[in-house]
Length: 264
Image 1 (cartoon, rainbow, N blue to C red):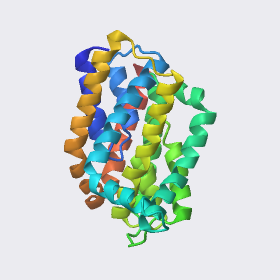
Image 2 (image 1 turned 180 degrees about the horizontal axis):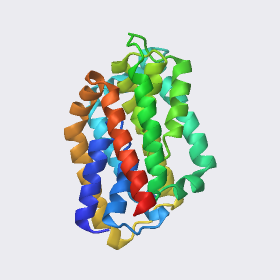
Image 3 (image 1 turned 30 degrees about the horizontal axis):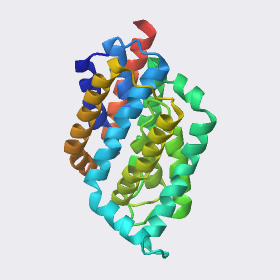
Image 4 (image 1 turned 90 degrees about the vertical axis):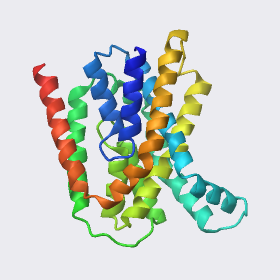
């Protein structure tokens, strides 16, 4: 992977992480366009690094909320911040279980599986279309909701299934307010990603070769900076715009991916 490719992939990650269009799916499609020959492990390593960058940009954008949550936790009592964290923990459980139990199988889905990405983008399109028809409410995320949203997040570990699209759509279909759904969706993934990165670093699953440090660093910086610039705009766009717009986009890109994988 050269420097320019790493930067382009980083920008794609930063731009697509906050829209319900599947950042992992777009990364796999971009790698295919670039003619990427990485084995699944190397591809997953780069994907994890880029997700870590956007997780960090999310923390920066939501720094006020994060600080309030931390203040509430250190009060050591059952308050709104503690409840919110408990819901985040509940939402993480399905993805943690699936990630640990089927780690090798999940790795095999990355690295040029364009047909899979295309099919999963069509699934994302259908989910967004269903959510677009749901009525908006002022309801908060409940504890039961957090588990169901967590299951959708676990399913979104497949490339092409949008994590934000799956979690926000699930929330909306459960009757959660779209603004609150978007906030919960973007914050719930941060500890999961950081935990995944820490696990891989400690276990040695991610091995940084000297030749890979520069492109990985460039990709990380590109994803972080583009995430900072795009996060606020994209979050507002998700809240204001109809999900059907993103559904159409995912259907078009998914269809193109399927045709490309079958005939080229």
